[in-house]
Image (cartoon, each protein chain N blue to C red):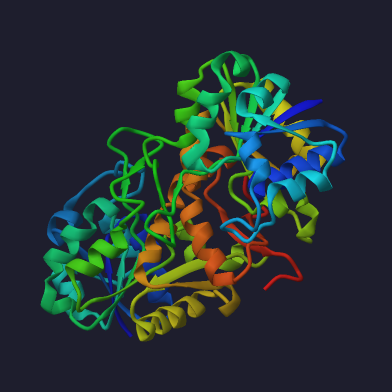
Length: 232
Length: 232
């Protein structure tokens, strides 16, 4: 399938690599593809230049947000929360129309250091903002509650653990679930919370996630919902 | 130990019953003890009148917030988030001074129906508000991320699961941990996140908790943190 991945950071690279390895035709979208490719040296997170990553993944294409969106049958938003709305605007409403987008972004604000706060929460969410701004895009919030390495390799944890999806379009959620299954997620591990307003719940997991990350000194963890055996 | 439990709702009753069964001298605090005792019929949550509950638990005392606080060596705040600050004000600074308070309350606002929003979140929390208002009280946020029945009976779930505590005073956290151990929580199940600002993280778990409650159709669940076996 032709898949567009918005964002070339750790999450975008991890998703693009996995999708490429599964045989999909992947194009990553960024603000300025040419400028991204000339950057030398490690970035702020200590990652090597994008051109090195692209060289190591020759089948993955790089384009503008608009080019990646036009290329795609399915979209993955792996931008920072701060950049998500702008990325979609640059992608262009026409290129997004009728398509499903798995939205992994979280509205984290690191401008005042660690731990970050949220730029939107409580009675609204980034997932809802994106859905409202692009009503003909089918936003499915998901994979935003765990680290990138686990998103595409859930079996790195030795027991069942859970992720949450939500969105207003059932077909779009089915499409995302099929993708998640191809990453190794079982049906029982994917909890469909309902409509896109549930993004308030999953985005507000981040404040405890970042604290747990600091406390456990590793991002390689996830939440498992444990039910009483006689419940339900 | 002499323990004061603020709040006579489901959480207060569950905690008071457990503490009583463990041999503690429990006094529940409420705004108007006399009025609470004359109420007839079921309350808004379908629970029987408080006087019936008190009759079934003859060793548990009932008093005002101030009387419960004066009685107590250790405090448990099981009021609604909406009533927490007022309860502490009525308890009186002098009756709270130097004491440890396990704060279970969540700043849930049901005024616009279900799901509730939070009255405070993101860059502040109810736990912090209470700690700031009563600097000589040692607030330990905890047990606010699961249903009352599981707070006092963690072994109702058949595997290890987790709760989170936070607060500024290490001795107070040790005191709370001892209480939690007496409920059946193991050391490995209690994650100390750090200072009281971590209450932002645990209180913001509620938005996904209430959605999961609706989705799973039972409150008898909790979060388990699953770690990669080679992590940490």
